[in-house]
Amino acid sequence: MAPTSQGSSLTLALVAGYAGSGKSEAGKLLSAATGWAMLDKDTISRPLTERLLQAMGSDPDDRHSPTYLDHARPLEYECLMKAAWENLECGISVVLVAPFLSEAADSQWTGRAMRRCRRLGARFETLWVDSDAESMRERLISRNASRDTWKLAHWATYAGGIDLDLRPVTPHHLIDNRITASRPLAEQVETVAHGLVQRP
Image (cartoon, rainbow, N blue to C red; front, side, top):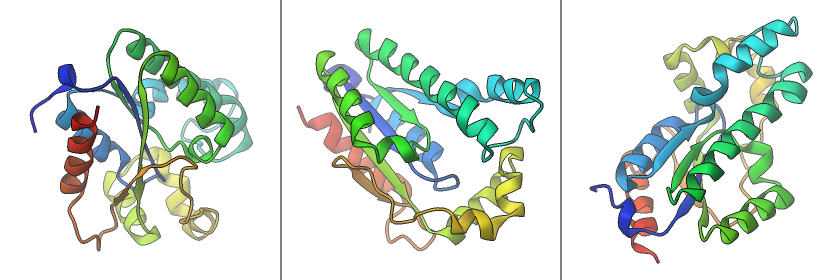
């Protein structure tokens, strides 16, 4: 599908899900299909996060301790959302790629985001990239990122702490990205993109 951002409604599209679910790939596919800007939380904030954690005497690859969760993570999302709002204020639709695990499941957070979108004349859409533990583990191994070291080294603990039934509280587009999925990721995202671009 050729980019059609000029003819589609202003949109904020969250591409959310667990680590290793395939969010970044889905976000790139959605951005390519719609012509909308793509902002990935890791791309925007990872260097700053790593330096901040180091300055606090923590592991730069930490993504699970209270140090990261209480101090670095809120700043990551603050930067991501500020960049998104700025794009929308300029009339540019945005694809946001991040886990959004607590945010998408929080009716107060989503309510605030939806109200701000309405003030800007934008739609609020969420794509939830679903997967299973084994598929996510294989993707984490394949991407070989240092930030995944703890997850893979403590897989039983990590996998036991995630809720595979978690879903956004708002209506959303469910993308099945298990290795055993019946439809390829690209085909599923293309279908969603077509609907978003065509719907007024």
